[in-house]
Length: 81
Image 1 (cartoon, helix red, strand yellow):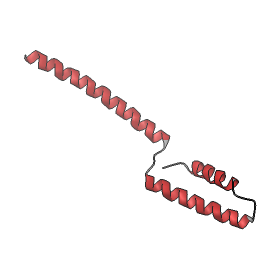
Image 2: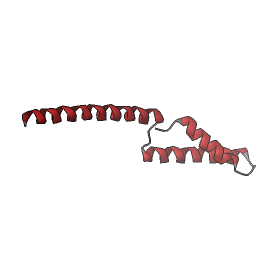
Image 3: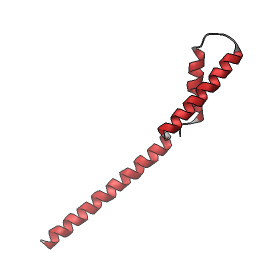
């Protein structure tokens, strides 16, 4: 899931471009934007950078093991011929 800090940064960026006015309206807009962003990110099923990097590392190790096993199988097949 995306970090709460990132959502707050996006909300802050959006509210900065709003015209100056009532703080009540700005608060309401901030809250609605935060809710909409959070709901959108949940639907997208996003992962954090740390989770992505961890899965990349797992995939890299799996590929290395697969390549090693392919070499073993190839040498065994060569021995059978």
